[in-house]
Length: 195
Ligand SMILES: C[S@@+](CC[C@H](N)C(=O)[O-])C[C@H]1O[C@@H](n2cnc3c(N)ncnc32)[C@H](O)[C@@H]1O
Image (tube, rainbow, N blue to C red; front, side):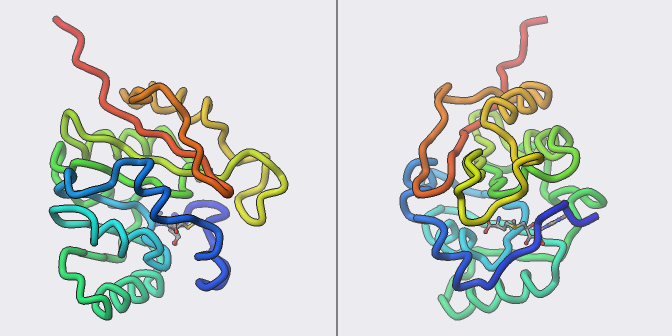
């Protein structure tokens, strides 16, 4: 099932809407991360820069074969070999990585879709203890030039609430400002309660 309102505009326009280095800096995406999984590579807007920064393998999936092909082309043209990009429906088949195997899971412009708690549960299952689910989304401001309709666009507080239902907590407790149009959250696994 394709996530609602997850269609994309032209690539060149989409990529004017983000300050990718700033976003990745503020989320702490750097060589301290080994393996990372991304839901929805799209044009590879984040895939390629993330792969360049991390120390391990970036596994990325998209339900749309044209997006996967475009991301593969870009990785190949950039001489990047630490990306595995596959066509996959996460609702039907999950992320395709071992439980607790990833340092981070990227949910970028995704959580306006159906079943956000289920997606966050899948993301929580993929990361190791000490890892993080990294989220960015459009600010809840109708003046943003793109983004899902305001009715389904989640506020950061809504995502923190969904995350709690998936066993995740907002790491620094803060909402990251990712100008010009986004905010971000770093979600970590809740410590196991003593039995
Ligand atoms: C709004 S785009 C965001 C792309 C990328 N994360 C970014 O921020 O540039 C959402 C992407 O999710 C993909 N997608 C939608 N439903 C999906 C599903 N069920 N499984 C995997 N990918 C899906 C879409 O094809 C699209 O490329």
